[in-house]
Image (cartoon, rainbow, N blue to C red; front, side, top):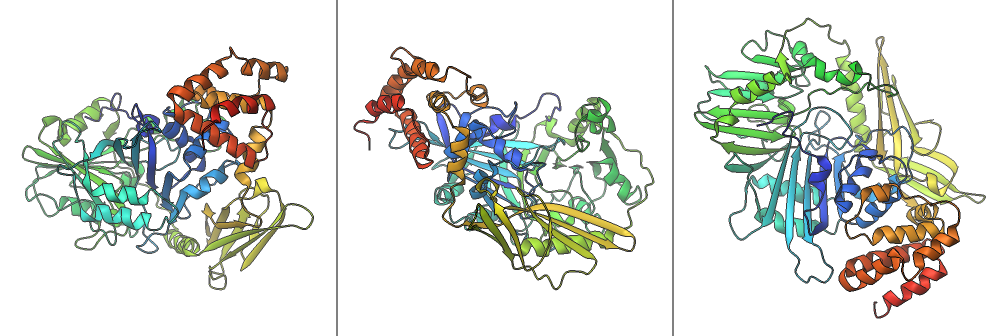
Amino acid sequence: MLDSRNDRLDYGAELAPPDGFELDAAVATTYSLDLNALLAVPIALCFSNTLEGDLKGEKIAILEAMTQLKDKLKVFYQKGNIHCPSSYNRLYALLEPCLQAIVPSGGVFSSFHPKLWLLRFKESGAALKSPKIKYRLLILSRNLTFDRSWDLALSLDGERTAATATAHAPSWITLFSDLLSQANDFEASDRLLKDLPYICWQVPKPFNKLELLVGGPVYGHPVDSHRKSLSALMVVSPFIQSQEGNIFGLKQLAGEQVNVHKVLCSRAEELNAIGPTALSDWDCYAINPSIVDCEESLGLNDGEEHILSQNLHAKLIIRESGRVCDWFVGSANATSAALGDGDANPRNTEIMAKLSGNDPQLSPKIVLAQWLEQKLFVKHEFETIELEDGEALSSALRKLMHELIAANWTLHASKNVDEGYDLTLSHTFDTDKFPLDAAIKISQLALPGQLFITSELKWFKATLAQLSSFIIVEVEIARGGFSKTKRCVICADLTIEGGDTRQQHLLQSLVNSPEKILNYVRLLLETQPNKAQWLAFEPTGNEAQAAINALLSSDSPLFEQLMVAASRHPEVIERIGKLIKRLKIAQVEIPSEFADLWSHFTKGRS
């Protein structure tokens, strides 16, 4: 189990629909979010392809995938935790309707921390009256970012069934109900909430039991009470200390029991910060520093702005009692914020899956032995370190950031009398009450320059392509010779005078020639989309009219494919019809030769 060389999940493959099915709805939750990582996801969801390859830039493949995902995807994330991209991409505008920001309900020092994907697939075929439905659930320790850390993931396939549904805490349904109630524009909510209590998830071998758990201020504990007699306990967690510096979360897992073999796997810096005295009754292991720094050692970070490590980010708790082992996999670190303190509920919102079985390979001893043999972890040798003197500053910064994300942000774009748009940003943050030693700067993601925060901020003569809901907030606090800075992206509520035509403008600029239109149609005709062809979408060069004539000739692949699609794959004709409609709305001129040909395939269709 958990062989670091062989037991690997491909993120893109897990998001892709099963053969013969297509995506009907997707819900994701994450603590932090990278916009470029989210732009890559539709390639898997819509094209059933993995995520390797050059997915950067303004790709027509991403535009098409996001168009197909319209009203099908909703991503819940902690407000203020969008990473600031190094450059602006006009495709970010397509992500705005998919995002739903969550302000943590447990106060300043709480987090919205669950990491999962809930995917609903339906049987392909436009003519099917009652398509079959399948579900997939991914429970992760990884955020929706490009982080290279070591993580754990659990993939479960399921179906709604009249038989016994998978055991779940009542809060499992409550969490989804609470989240989806905030996404008023997500039309799949009712279907998901109707099915969710009755889904039977396949239990992965060698486990024989599965239970889904949620933790949080109103949801209870994400890890249930430990057994009366434990023989062994293994905790894998990158973070252990609480905000106050204690290890109450870790102690709660062990309880008051004695003669329990306790193993702790974490980051070396976290173990050193706690020290050997507090961890004297734990066997401590750190992820191998040769793995953490391998990319830097091999020179693979050349040209990167930041050094990218491969540190530990996985979360796993294994409890052994007699022959039975319980595994807890998910988002919760071994901290009191994630697990609670005694009877008090945790501050963070977390998701965990509890898997139980009596196979010997599930024991902590076997798992640890395998990791040590593979040199993934090494016995930790404690080192004395100098702790940063700035905890009070960190707390002040976090409090200020919480006030900023709890505020409402509204951005209005009004037409400038000369050209473009003037932007007005307003908010409910009280600018008279933040600390005097703090500086807050605001900027537009697509526009240069920063402005110090005031009750209302303005930018002038922005182009349509520069309009974005995403604003950059930079906060710095300087106190007692120390300073701390945090930079994040907040998604404001954007209104545009005259309506939002950014998607039409984007389509117009990316498909700006007759040749590109026909190539777009040709790609849509592929019943099994080829990611490489989509990513290579470019004009073929000169001789455009000759290329158009060749594509439209009676013996061309395009003509043949249209004939086959009309008789065997009506959903393909429907996709092309939607493209033609979008092109007309965007005022893109459709080649007359294709318009004449297309009219024969749309006769009798509404």
